[in-house]
Length: 122
Image 1 (cartoon, one colour):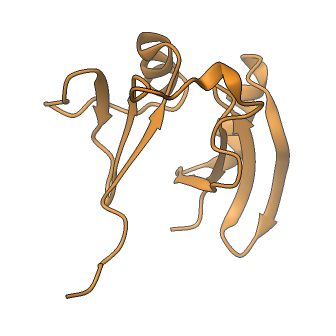
Image 2 (cartoon, rainbow, N blue to C red):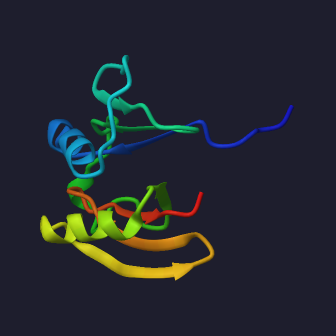
């Protein structure tokens, strides 16, 4: 048997309602019809994405930046427009937009400090 690839990605967050609202309001993600307890799953494809309350024993306030060492990339139809909207809303931009092999690309910090990269090449 072989692993076929990522099938579910979840970020552990300090405030579930705040994180879910950020991803809905700022990125336009829509909630999936069903989510497990203590999580919000979004209707993303091909891989489901969620925010969730921390697992027992996880203390997010004890780390400088959650997710350090993990690269989370999300696809958008228009990275530059999303960048401009996030920057205007005061969302911290970690890396400004550049053009590369994955199209227009930039990185922002979400409310919990996770670095999320957006690209627009399908």
